[in-house]
Image (cartoon, rainbow, N blue to C red; front, side, top):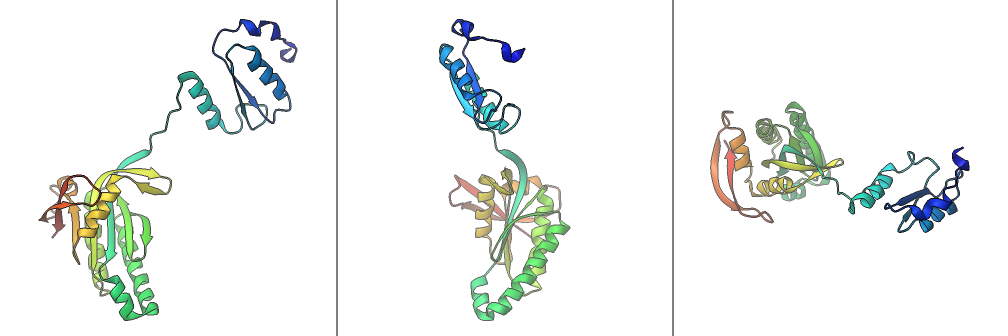
Length: 239
């Protein structure tokens, strides 16, 4: 009965804004039928999408975006997923000079031992490894206290390998980008790490405030400019 209904005589009477959606691979209803509707309804808009007859199948997001724009005049941009986290950056001080002195084979063996030590401490303090580049690690934690203690444990662990490590931490909102993360908090953490001295765990004031009462002690390292980050930032070294 549905296929026998002929609405052609009343199309000119339709006054409501109309969006006609047709699937390009629809074998039940030819595309010409969808185009006919759009051409004979005053001001109608025609949009064709790849796929079969049923609109519930295929790229539903694209279909809903088209409907949303038709109804509201704009397409909403989804907010990136964000969460509060503590970011940790570590790297070996003087790694280039050490690699040159040891040679490729011995340096690779030492670097492998370093990676094992770092990952062992990340597992122990429930840190999540995000990225590893050369001799540096980038990890996140859901608590700043564990992040600070992990950084200190990593520093002490690799010192037994004859390596000096520097680490930087900051707590803030990060953006989840699939398997990667981003956001200003990540940039701040990286800048803090770059200012750390050999054997030093350096943190932002935010971290210090959040771990108040944890019995972690800090030494004030003064105000610093962080490249690319507005304002000045007070940094602290973990005792």
